[in-house]
View (tube, rainbow, N blue to C red):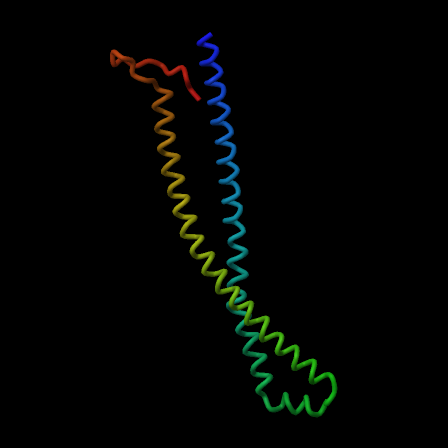
Length: 154
């Protein structure tokens, strides 16, 4: 009867180890996919840092150019008003895009540092677990100091 409880406990331990391994594998897969997406986000942040100032500069240049106002005065209809509103919208949207790009760039940079630390810690833990696993599979010392094979291999 005691042996049945021991087998049941070993089966529960095995299923617990397997479920933990499954969860860890899932988390590691998720982190690796996020790391791949990071490259796309990095490209978007760089484009925001380059293109947004270009759009703002071009819009400000047009709004300050005397010939632009001459065209607006000559047309004197909805065209000038719509064009002015569009240039204002471009400045506002590009400013928001620039701020978002800077925040994203900072976020990605800090995430890279944390990811590198995570990979380093993971590799260290994997080495420790491999060493521990090898010790358990090789054998354990009995009371006399002799080596015995470990029957509880997981």
